[in-house]
Image (cartoon, rainbow, N blue to C red; front, side):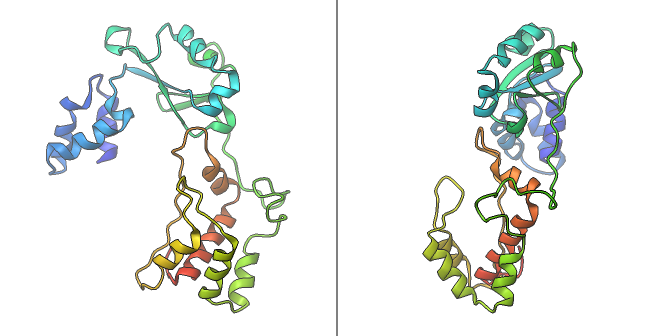
Length: 248
């Protein structure tokens, strides 16, 4: 239903109260089932013009040009950030906190088309060609970047081989992780060994790798998954082994 709500929002200039209930009805759901997500997500809830430009003002994009990219885009489009598009010429400009292009900022979305770089204002004004962010690709042949100096550039799946082929038990793995003091990458920093111990022991345990892209200015998880996917999969497999899970 989220996709249907997004499609409806792209065709409407008004807020979701007038169209979200109808979308929910198409799925045989009450109005609240459509209004809930449609009023929660800013992309769905905020009225917008026929052309919608979303500009990132989060940490990395702000730092890229000390915030100067926003007024430059406002001047280029002759519209103020977060102005009511119903009072203008059909172009809406909205600030957002992270688009996931922190490595190439400043960044914006012109409709669904990403634009990045120091000439971003010229791109949205049509004065220069649009420059989409490059997509990092994994390269196992070069020198490690993300984890260089952390694991001495060791090959992926080496720890898995040493652990499983070396006949370590799940209990031994959890004991070593507990001794290391390893904590989760989330904001709460829960001890990893405690989470694994609590989750283990059930035949229905499923381990999930949560790629979190929600923190402004933070794209570390995305970078890990795109540049070093084998190590992410190895970690997922090791967590399954330690928890006694057969699926992940």
